[in-house]
Length: 436
Image (tube, rainbow, N blue to C red):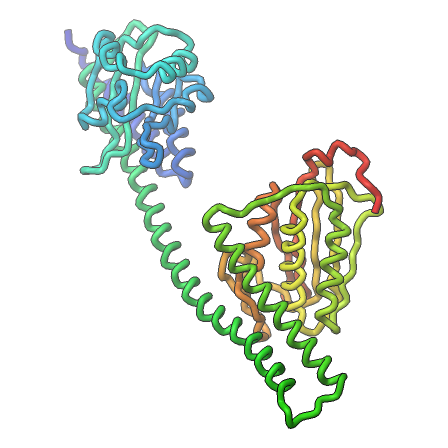
């Protein structure tokens, strides 16, 4: 028996309202997961008689359908599900590429090949072993591009989906598919831009790197050639000066090469952290003394608490982090001044800051400061030598320890770089730390 005119008008009004609400939700400035969650919450509020709903998206990297958003399920449980190609209702509807309306017998047949782990997850997520007695399954597709499946089910209510519901839900699925397609196209465009930007930066970096490597080599070659001149009788003081300059340039060259090698290890995921109990103030003092020997116009000072806890960290890597940041502070304060290394205690971590009195960094340069090959452009036109890898390498090493790194700066007033290290670990058993 068909619907009366009033019932038909009521149904169309409800469908129009639902489409309006879903369209408004899809227009919201949200990331795709948040957007789809909002859509499913809206469907749960306005779409009768559906009791369960889930958007399953195909994950190419995993080769599985993953739940992206849902209503009516225990979200924590349904998130664990991963359906293979062709598996259960989702896989079959995706392969067939058409919407379908299923009764309880057809639901049971379509779900018969669901793997036991997924079936257990589904039972936990629904709270019953009872199968839905009505289901709507609609592929999410735009043209020839398929993204996943929208599944709506009736579990307990004494109602069924109708062919009219199928047409309406297909319209909803088309709206959702357009949102997924737009997000993926934006991500692909952003990835292309990132790749082009990285290629450009890499080319610029290689050009700068060749220049930066030639500079210390030219210095080393020049002074060593001068020392070898038979016709010149250099004084002991002058010979010592030349040798110190050669030694300093060798250190610069070593730093550049180490940054390049470490950057390569980071790129392939082979950065190794070998933790052991360390006294951070002692490491900072060693690096400060080492760096102080290379500058006459800076004064490097330390400010650590009288008692500082042992940390579980890789001393070689943490010294490199300190060395890279202090080197950066010296380079960006060409007129000299104080470089202050300060250690602060917090309940769950420690924070080390390195402050200089240099040229500072503009706000727009703070955002990409820790990206590979990025070079801060000095407002004064002062050329800062380096590879653009020191701070990115430092960031990777800090993050490998479970910490984070950030910067604050004012142009003309100097820069402070911070990094944190967690206090958790075997050494944290000593609640009072060790005195220096």
